[in-house]
Image 1 (cartoon, rainbow, N blue to C red):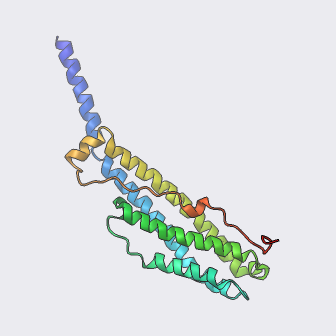
Image 2 (cartoon, rainbow, N blue to C red):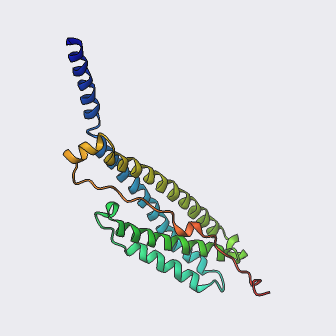
Image 3 (cartoon, rainbow, N blue to C red):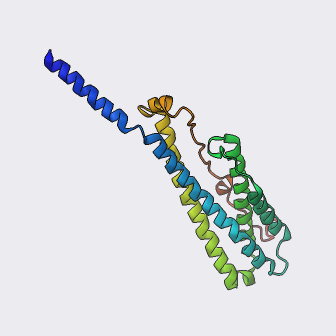
Amino acid sequence: MRFVGLGFLGLLAVLLIWGFAGINKIPTHEESAHAAWAQVLNQYQRRAELVPNLVATVKGAADFEKSTLEAVVQARAKVGSMQLPADLLTNPEAMRAFEANQGALTSALSRLMVVAEQYPNLKATEGFQTLQAQLEGTENRIAVARKDYIEAVRIYNTELKTFPGVVWKSLLYADREPMQQLQVDPAKQEVPTVDFGTSGN
């Protein structure tokens, strides 16, 4: 009987230690997700800063499609003027609006690069090649930052819903809400079409 009592106390001690070991997991995972989100914003900002130089370089090409440039300028302006609410990471509507604006800029830049392929003189300039390489590198960094954020949010949201995190949430972190995930950018799912004037033949 004494051994049963000691065994029960030992088991209880192990459970308490295990439970208390997780007391800081919610804020730790939350901070990781916030840091990952800051990196996403940093890479989007880097891209936005490249756009004016890219537009200025492309404007120098004779007869370059004005509507394509205007779409890039307008999409960049919309991204730059968007006010990010404090609850962006837990607000589905705000996150959708943020992604829609970033997706519009991604799409406009993709169209710009496709159209630029029709201008050999533009493609041959060192300035355009440099900007194109910087933009491609930034798009890659955006993809990595988005992936890291998605994983950080998955871990955080899982902690809020599973034991013992769900207990600590109810006791100490009742104000914590699940964070919004980034969705696959629709612009990334569509392959840009290039028409060299042969579609009507």
